[in-house]
Structure formats: C-alpha cells, structure tokens
Image (cartoon, rainbow, N blue to C red; front, side):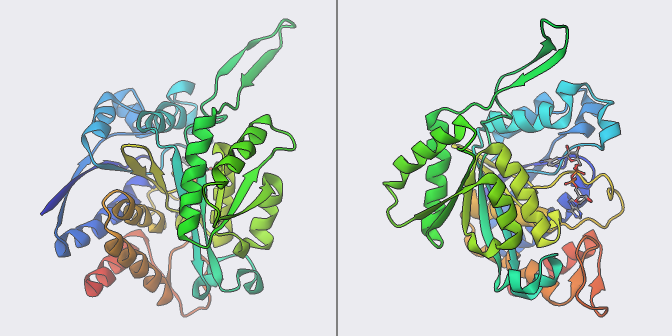
Length: 366
Ligand code: NAD
C-alpha cells in the first residue's frame, strides 16, 4: 500500500471550514483506493500569529520538509483586524510569500472552469459562455514585484517614498514559460501570452524569452495580448482562451477576474508547483465576511485536493472522479450561497452539506 504524508495548513477565516470538507472527500478516496494518507495539521497565517507569535512558525516550516505535499487554506483578516499584526508578520508577507519562497513554487496553475450546464452561475450572458468556460491561468509565483527589493523612507525633501522593483532573471522566465508550453501542448495548442511590453521592460525580456522557448514547441500557437486588453477579453470573449501565461501580479489579478466570470471565487482551486514539492490552495482569500457561518463554498478547496492527487501523487482517475462528483452535485440543482440559482426549485446547501454530497457521489462512483 502506498503512503503519502500531507501537511494541512487550515489558515484563517473560512479556511478551517472548507479544509474539513476537503479532508472528508480525501477519506473516501482512502477507503476505496490502495493509498493511505497521513494528515498532519500545523498553524499558519493570522491565527498562527496570535497563538504562536509568528504567522509561519518554525514547526510549520519544518513540516514542509517532512511531507509529500501541503494543502493550504486561505489566510488573512479583514482590513481593520489586519492592523493588529505588525506589517512584516501580516499573513501574506509573513507566511504566504515565505512558504512560496521556501518551496520555490514557481508554477501556479489556476483552472477557470464552468461547463455549459452550469452557465447560470456566471454573470455573463449565455451567448458569451457558449459551450462553457475552460481555460487555465499559468502564473509565475516566486518572482516579479512581490519578491523584488523594497525600500521605504524619507526622500531628500522629507517626503515619504516607496520603491518596489519588478525583478526577473531569464531562468525564472524560461522555467514558467516551459511549463505553460508543455501544458498547452497537452491541451488545444493555443497559448495566450499576457504581457505589458508597451510599458514594462520586464515584459520585453519576457517576450524575448518566449520567442526562444517557442522554437521548441512548434505545435503551440502563441497569441500575444496586453494585460489590459486581456482583462476586457476575459469578460467579452473568455472562450477564446485555453492556456494563459503571465507574470506574478498579472496572474494574481486576472485569476480573481477568472473567479468573477465563473460567478464566484469559491469555484477557484489552484496548484503551486516547485521543483521538489508542491502545495495546493484555493485561489481566494479567507472571506472574513462569511467566516463561521457555514455557508462558504468548499469547491475551491476540494478541487485543490483533487489537483494534489493529480499533480503530486499521479492519481489522475481519483482526481477526475472528485471533479465529476462536484459537478454532478451542482447539476442536480444544489448550490451554495455564493452562486446564483437558475430557478426556485434549486436547493441551497451549506459548506458541510456540499462536502457530504460530494463524498456520497464519490462513494457511489468508485
Ligand atoms: P476574499 O477572496 O477573501 O473574498 C472576496 C469575496 O469572495 C468575498 O465576498 C467572499 O465572501 C467571497 N468568497 C471567497 N471565497 C469564497 C468561498 N469559498 N465561498 C463563498 N464565497 C467566497 O478576498 P478579500 O475579502 O479581499 O480578502 C480577505 C483576506 O484574504 C485578506 O486578508 C486578504 O489579504 C486575504 N487573501 C489571502 C489569499 C491567500 O491565502 N492566498 C488570497 C487572497 C486574499
């Protein structure tokens, strides 16, 4: 029997609620497959700061080195609450970016998927959704503005200033582009390169390297699009996309828009892949506005578990079964509070009910 060790960082806000549902689904997989999962929880995020004085405590850092993969819940507090934590310990700066740096998870995959039958979840018109939305954002995750040098202080006129730089070297750019080309060759062979080379030198270098990498992938057709135009295209014509690749901050922003066109960030799982190890997380934040109410949509978290099975443990069949179990719960007319209902016969369910139904479907399918 295969054994995998998984680190669980539940995080803040709705994190623990949706983590519970992911674990519920994983237990079903364990029951019916030849695999055993050892789950080890550890503190991470704002909650860890309040209990351990550090948002990424030592025990959690060392857990990263002991496990085969990590599942991370969303972290963060609302704007006012965040001020209770020193700036450098606030969850993104104190935990999330250090986790990404520690594991060097440079490749972030964010699927944006909504089949035609569930088109009513989307705020877009039926004719725009067509046969459904199905593309993946490949985001560079450990470079660019978020990881560049930062300086704040007073300038010679005594005015406060800030200086943050967008930094990449050619290897970082090449590595993520190779991942995007590889993915594109397994899908439709159309790769949208999202950039801002009309203004940013970083995009000029990015595009130069893209042309070099493209030579090794003659079957992939590259389409170049400025990031501002891409924001519009995501609303007006999202079905043109299959794989989109972009630098860190562009990916952060456009993937949230991806959630918007699906109808909810609760439909956005993700995989963060490094050379040795990966971690998996919903793309969204800790949703403090709905935390503790039992109404969060756990699709993003259960989907992140499915991505872990696929990418870290080569359990493609089991992952597919999880996706289809979730889709069939929706197809039966169940929906969570963040999603819009097609008609009054549809049934509103909470976080744990959704998890129960997915677990039930999964048990039937295996
Ligand atoms: P958010 O993503 O937490 O929430 C935006 C909106 O989407 C809210 O209305 C929320 O209720 C809704 N939403 C998000 N996930 C949902 C789900 N699974 N089910 C139902 N509704 C869902 O963004 P925010 O409010 O701007 O940020 C809250 C905190 O999260 C901040 O502290 C922010 O820094 C942090 N954050 C963390 C991550 C991360 O952990 N990777 C990512 C983004 C934001």
